[in-house]
Amino acid sequence: MLRERNFLLLWLGQLVSIFGGRFSELVIPWIILEVTSSPIKAAIVAISTHIAPLLFSLPVGVWIENRPKKKIAMSAELIRAIMMSFLVLVIYIDQFNIFVISSILFITGIAGLFFTISVNTILPGIAGRKRLVEAHNHMEAADAISTLIGPLLAGFVLTAIGAAATLGIDAFSFLLSFIGIACLTIKEKVPEKNLQANKKDSWKQILYGIKLLFSTKIQQFITLNHMVLNFSTHAISLLAIVYANQVLGLTATQTGILLSGAGAGNIVGIFLMNRVKYMYWNKLYGTILFVSGVGVILIALSPNMWSAFAGMFLFDGALSMAFVINGAARQTVTSDIFLARVSSGGFLLAGIVIITANGYAGIVAELFNPVLALLVCAVILLVNSYLSFIQKDLKKSLSSFGID
Image (cartoon, rainbow, N blue to C red; front, side):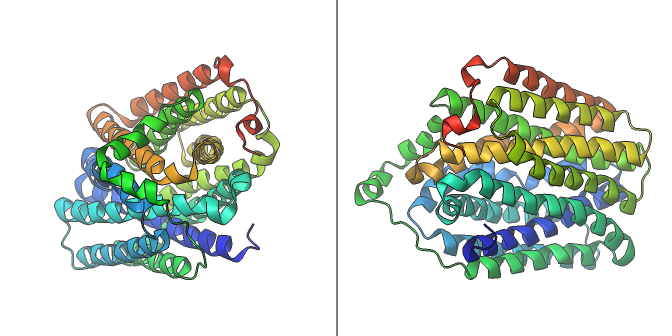
């Protein structure tokens, strides 16, 4: 697929954008913990990025359906580049303020919402519906490469040149992504007139996106796992940084190495996908979530950086496979004309879950300890693993749902 110009441009744009994001994901919580020693304040800043999906995802999905997705994605990336540059300036002039940083990340989150829904909507047209698992696996590869190298470099760069310059790399990555989207040559489908007319009844259209998420047994299963995956990813990502900073006493460079374990696991997960995609869905999800839960337990009980690295490897490597299948499955069982609103409905649920996850991580880590918070996350994954195994109605191969 990387030989195809449009997919290659989209993939490269995602690669650099995610790569830059890995820098800010380490730098921002790290400097907050260093200045305030408060996991709750770190959680508040992390939450600010995800408020936008909670407030705007449903109307944005319906609004995007009738408009050029490429132009929307370009505009969103340009806004993210500008806002992240402003954050660089704020840090550089030493005007550290939780409210200012949260406000900047809130606007960046709105732009990110428009960008992601637009890209999710045009991806099936670029890749083709019969290759969605392959397409999502390639996108996960971009995430894996970024997660392997990004935190590792971020830790070194943060130590060497400071927070402002490190965040500047994130701002530049959005600009590169903007250029990649601009170079796409795609012909977008115009919705039928009768569908455009129905948009007058906007609230029904908005709520229909939520209804579709629970409309069938397979949609319900996808939605449940969508929520579990997002909660686990965001809670444990923040908790791993808190654990490294406050329990293991690691430096920024060592924390970057620790977080890169997730990227190493992602890469292994990508290579395993072709071998496991024909397994029964319930067995595949059950196994993946069990391995991920074991990884979280290993993080929580780690006495040093390298055992925690192994835990991150297992945790995120398994979850990366789940994200590939979950994303491809959602698009496979959803009609083209409803992709944007279903994507926005998923963003609403994800927004609620991610805010809950970050709040949970910050509060439990500060009031109790990060070890307890990590162990609870492990229990959630293991319980969902059991629930996946006993789903008899989903004792089918992924190809039975049109994913091949």
